[in-house]
Image (tube, rainbow, N blue to C red; front, top):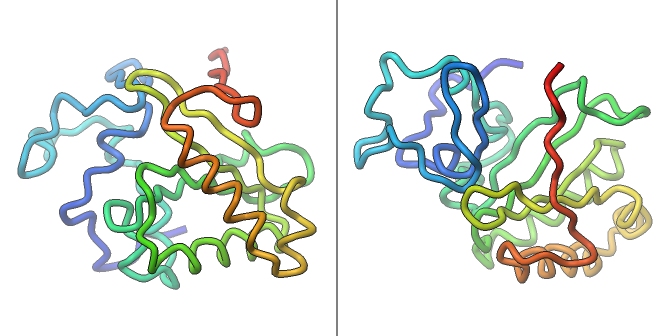
Length: 184
């Protein structure tokens, strides 16, 4: 998959705050602002770490997503699931990380897209950032919402997103803390 020509991060700095980086050269916990982030963007952009150079959110790749999907505008960071992390039976996966409440005018489009992905057999996860430095809480949406998505009944999908937004990093029975996979 190629990054769309002309689609730039602009003023968006969501990945510089909410993503987790754990490489030999650089470690940044989720929810902690990168120490290299300044008002103009990345202070070490020309020499930034490989993990940062190679990372791009889903909005940078998917042409059918409008500028309203840029994470700082939508409140949603789209992250593709690496193939080696997908459960059996899935060829593709995407996570919707809710970094802030989506604008009301955007909610319908978001719910329709989630339903479309579920119906198409994409592994869909919903994540809510936890307190700074902690992993997000995550839920897989496919099994719970497949029937509603197939019927185009968006109310259950909206209810799950509303519950997720209400968490604000607090634990609940529905969302469990993501446990990092040990490195070999």
